[in-house]
Image (cartoon, rainbow, N blue to C red; front, top):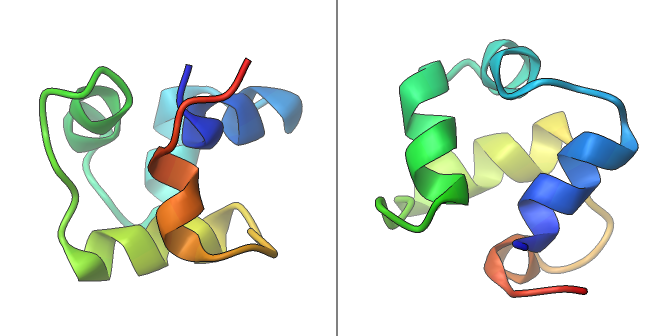
Length: 65
């Protein structure tokens, strides 16, 4: 599971909610979480900001247990 998906689930958010908070399309969030889309730097920043991520934004796209 990507750290992004874990952070989203830890907040109790759906993919749709993350998409709204990040100002992105829900399909893009789903594709990123399922590794079908590599996010652009701007998308990475939007997702990190929406999730109030405290680490390096790129860490959101690493595998976690």
